[in-house]
Length: 109
Length: 111
Image (cartoon, rainbow over all chains, first blue to last red; front, side, top):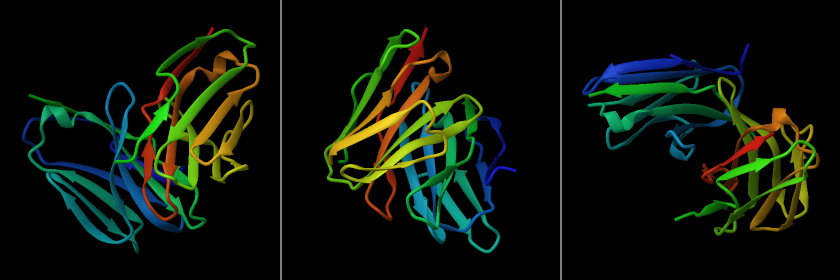
């Protein structure tokens, strides 16, 4: 069983829909990251969380430490949000990140 | 803004060649990482370094080595490239306790 599980693996939605991507993990962590990767390879760090909730524009990330679960939400989705979204957790040794396999999101106009 | 650059965006090499991938950062970050990314497997850590001349093996170090002679530069070396090392290679840097910043990636094709 992978230490970081993301769901769904693939998601296709219509423009304007509210999007939720989930991440569950099984190890002790000091932080959780959400990252975005567009076609062509460039990776952008969206959030780093250790508790609670963070918001940036139309993106919201939440984490529940007790349940070992995080969600990434996108409000009013747009085709330019189409990308792979990756969840990664920093294990308690503080140097290594454990990666999820990513969620491929396609937003259709 | 943090800037992480990688020496090549695309690289084609032949089996058995020695390959150097370079990563340079301009923000004096202690930690630097090399990952490879393959479809369906996500990102996998090859090596990381937490200081000059210090290196640690990641999850898949076999077939690779690294060099960190200067703080700003972290090199990934494929001593004898093989076809199963065809992949996207991503470098990242980090200040301890903070988020990681990624370079644009190098797509390596080994023929």
